[in-house]
Picture 1 (cartoon, rainbow, N blue to C red):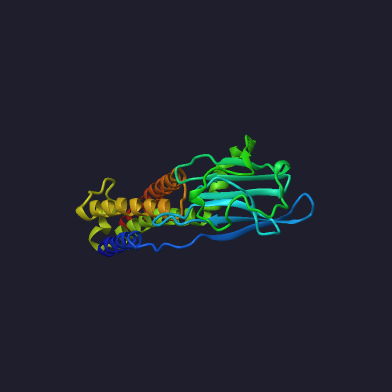
Picture 2 (picture 1 turned 60 degrees about the vertical axis):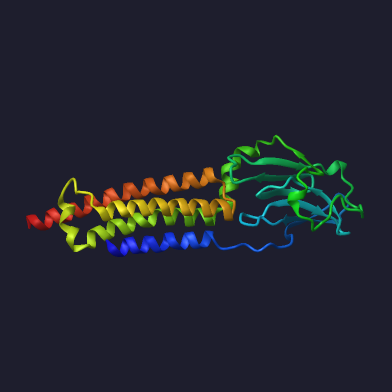
Length: 260
């Protein structure tokens, strides 16, 4: 049991240290998302422009840049933005924040845009948090909004897998530590084993650990908190069911050994 508590305590301290790392200010930067031909065949670049979130995730907007390097359209600024754009005539952008449950959709108003203009509607490398109203994109009521959970989870699938693993792993440690700890091995035969101080301490450290994971994922990568809570709840529920199943198996094995 001691090594379990020490391991979880180290994880908690690591989370606290990671959350306290000072962030350095930086200039805006871009990441290209897609290149599509415009109405007249000219190349249009869809790129994400990131600002400076200081201690949280960098705010971002999607902008369309023509062959002259001029920005001709951009979405509102959010903590995350995605693109569904098979063609210039069917182009949807979606935005959301860490508190979102549904995405907000914006369609590219290509019929009223001058894709060959040389003067930009805004600076290409300005901080996006200074310009929040969209230009060239208009709100959309597409039924794609019903796919919000899939769109959001797709964007953060790696983070949510890590979150699920980190919430489930302590249950594995607890079950195997209890089984392997010599002083408590025989208690597995008791249908109602007593709860000791190490068990309570482990539970407290686990709650602190969950809070740290939740805050760091929510702040640093802007993963929507409602979905993070859902993933955590599912992981904890599966952990509880798994640990009960393991204890039943250990007790059955122990009773079989005693009877033999």
